[in-house]
Image (tube, rainbow, N blue to C red):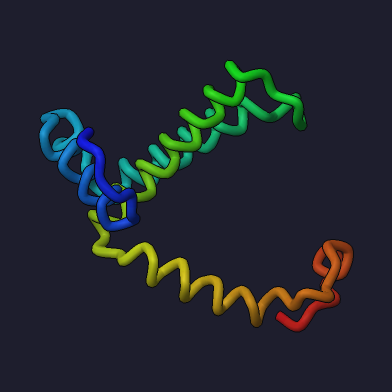
Length: 117
């Protein structure tokens, strides 16, 4: 890939171009398949960290980075197919979460149903 500013827009376009240039990717470029891909790649990421809560070797960090990138690539592909503006969707969700999750509420409060939403 040529060097240029990395932005959400550029990444989304690069991923779309990559997918469109490969027949197998074009054939499976639909919301259902992409959502399944997100889940599968997220499970692979979980597998890398499940039994080791920290102190990763360089090799382990590289595998974690690759699995995380796979999740993100599938998410970007899903957003493209669905026509979702990623920065706008994330910003809207953060605004929603600010109301839903006040800073002074603990995990125990949520578990026990002691929260506003």
